[in-house]
Image 1 (cartoon, rainbow, N blue to C red):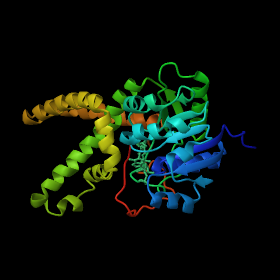
Image 2: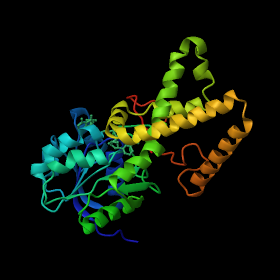
Image 3: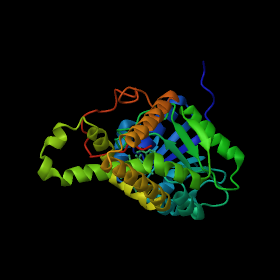
Image 4: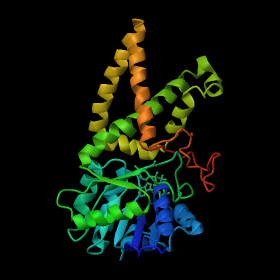
Length: 323
Ligand code: NAP
């Protein structure tokens, strides 16, 4: 069956790490855009993008990348999105759609919005998909398949532009949902941001206990701890920005979490086996529900093993298992 005509003529990718390079690979594979122009902050990454053949053109500046593009996707840590919007604003083509992939949406809208001209369509997005790796080598075309991409168009956004971007993500394999930015940030605070905070904490605590546990922490890491270490290896820049940008929602969820930890602490102290059993039974059912709706599988890597993905340590200590 022949592929449909490309949706966009020229896709500009600003930032080509795990997410940007996965978009490039998937968009190419699916023929969703006619051409791709890409840029990254450092010369080393721009060189790597060219070596990997991820774009038709690799340019040195963000301003040059967006010239003549009808779709611009900013794929960088959320804390840097305002400065980049300021840089590209004057160079955007009228009628272009400007989007992003940031894990927090309210701050991105606040930071980017004021710098974008009225003549463009601003449709922020968050593909809820990731691995514990980063950088242009880590991406793969199937990353978004059967995962959610959440669009958070600001009030007054052009429905046609929103629907076109939704169609783009569907062609990349994602399921698309639209919601308000603050609702997104609240939901992701509990489903993604808090779990990362817990992983960072528990691995840090274990490290501080190093004297007591010696190398036994690593030796017996299969006992639950190993999964936390994978998440806690997530990219420090990306996650620093997420917590700073989604402060209120994370603090709200952290407050509730602390209350629940206190309740479990009390149950353990009081020898209240029923309370523990009830809680663990409830959470087991939630896990089953996630598998049933196809958002995970019983296999350890969600069946996503990819020949191009190195499984042994990458050159940089990257990572994030976002979302
Ligand atoms: P990544 O692999 O680390 O790539 C980040 C890219 O952003 C690189 O091209 C990097 O350029 C560039 N960059 C870094 N700091 C910058 C700055 N201050 N100004 C301009 N460019 C900068 O990151 P990623 O995992 O693709 O994440 C990108 C975005 O996607 C983040 O906003 C994150 O919240 C979101 N997200 C991530 C995941 C996940 O699981 N990783 C999932 C969904 C959404 P250089 O290489 O040249 O430094």
